[in-house]
Length: 74
Image (cartoon, rainbow, N blue to C red; front, side, top):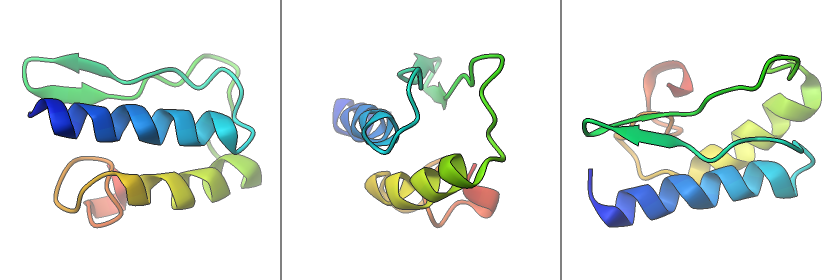
């Protein structure tokens, strides 16, 4: 995963926070993979979370995990 890809993931995390998902953590990069840890108590199925995700996943380049084009968004 390139540093440019990592920067896009960081922008997506910031986007989630800017859309009202306080406490949304920056992604974790390990072994060429990415993971967005969801803090306990955060409702990833809430309407607000889903709306923010629909907007913010557009910042992740197509074909990468969590992009709009990835199956199920993951």
